[in-house]
Length: 69
Length: 269
Image (tube, each protein chain N blue to C red):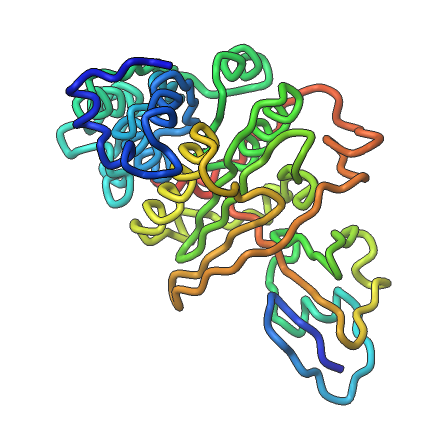
């Protein structure tokens, strides 16, 4: 499947769907707590990362928490 | 409208010749009241540019004193200011740049008990704080009071900012919901930050404040601007005002300001 991840095209071979949790892991996001995930413009509830599936042509954005000032 | 003196016409001439600002826009700046929360990495360039621009009343909030480790990025403070309260150091520089402005200093931590009263005196608020507790507090208090503000955050080589018009555009909680658990927040003293990142983001926030006051251009609403200065990549992520936002949604669950642990992201250590 091909998705848009953080604004860029990403081809994921031999897979037709993947959970949000799986994508975070694949992208080696070490602290998922420090990221809000937006899927097709909607914020994904943290409790549903394992059940929420990403499919072909979905748009995913990782919004990072940044506390520094 | 204010009548600008000859000296003011000269001082602000580069604003006045801008079609989108003009003498009317400059007069609005001179009548405006803007609050800068934090006199650190972001607050430094914000305060300097607002002062230079002639924003008539600028409030600045910070409880800390200047430390040597601040000087790598907090450009409003000098080596000779070490151990001085940051608000005093900042106010002195702002008045030196522009003696026409009024600076209100607040040497305190904003918390649920004092933020409402302080922000109520201002037209626009800029968040330059270094911890999630205060970032969420500024968001919540500004949304509840209907005061527009600019959110800003930096880390390492990255920055993010968005402008919030309460009730009209997405707020910080629409996307970020609640502060991450303190144990997940990376120690910023370990993470570090490239000094110039503070300048890059703070000046974007200052520009948003000036645009809001003058009415020039289009604000950074419903949009999170993020950048990665390592590859100098800028990106706009479209955000939405969410009907299920716990603060500004249809059935809000956050009805009062509450204390959140100030898990500091202290870049100064």
